[in-house]
Amino acid sequence: MTSLSQLAVREIVTQLASPSEAWRREARAHLDELTKPLGSLGRLEDIAAQMVSIRQERSTTPFRKAVYIFAADHGITAEGVSAYPSEVTHQMVLNFLSGGAAINVLAKLHGVEMNVVDVGVDADLANLSGCLDRKICRGTRNMLHEAAMSDGETAKAIEVGYSLALAAKQKGQDLVAVGEMGIGNTTSASAIAASLTGARTATVTGKGTGLDPVAQTHKRCIVEAVLCKHFGHAEEDRVSDPFQVLCCVGGLEIAAMTGMMLGAARHGIAIVVDGFISTAAAAIAFAMEPRVREYFFAGHRSAEPGHQVLLEHIGIEPILSLGMHLGEGTGAVLAMPIIESAMSLYNEMGTFSSAGVSGAVK
Image (cartoon, rainbow, N blue to C red):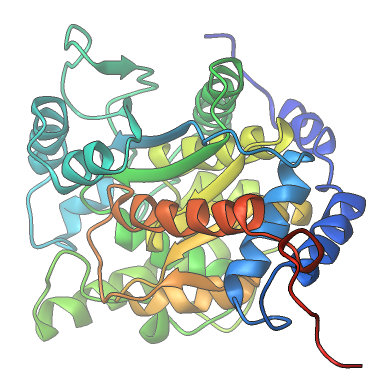
């Protein structure tokens, strides 16, 4: 793969346009004409109007849905920040490919195409059927001691996601969920959340895969030390350069998700953001180009405390809140039927005039 420069990443960002406000207004007017009290479908009306503005059409065609699961390892696991060993990343990729994970069940149930992408797993997966081999390197470096990725590695990982977004467009996909797998990546997401928002490390650092209180305190101390190492502070100060944040404390899968989100928005594809790590990537994309937010649907609110901080920072409201913190794109895929329901109501309900129903008394 040709190396992508930071300048080229910025050029990608400048190609992104906002969804159509004219289509959004038309959608709102149509929603107000449906046989229901004004606004009575609540957030479903917001979802429908946003989808219409993204797609820029009134269509009854079913969505072509897909979930992209980006997998990579993290050098920071050497510091004991996870309840599980790093080889679980590789093992879970095998589980995805054999159909045994939660995301497999949900994707099959809801008719969502699954795509498993190796962007940085510390194992040789090149010959595995069903796995997209986009490996940049075998995991990040230990961000406690050095930058997680070089500028070139970060840019290449962004390009992986961006190119897959183009492929999704060519396949006619119009609703994509963005998920991940990577032991240690909640530590990376916590560092990203603190860096971009200025939130306290105690606020954004949760249990991850199930740490006990002592281990969680250790993880919080590691995040604080990482922030001091790279940005000269532990908390309560924002870092203005999202590319620098991604290089220093990100992950290969997080960079690829960032590229996927920017690329999907560039090509007019609606994006369902998953949990904490997926939203960390969304926050990086948002910092690079705020207009990308208009293509986001937040699938759910994770039990990870840093997730709510990032959702509020970006300004997106979750569709579901089920206490989940699994990752894999599970919460995003679960939200897809809600989005489809909103569009079915928009397209198939009768209007007051077509149904011969009297409107509200003015």
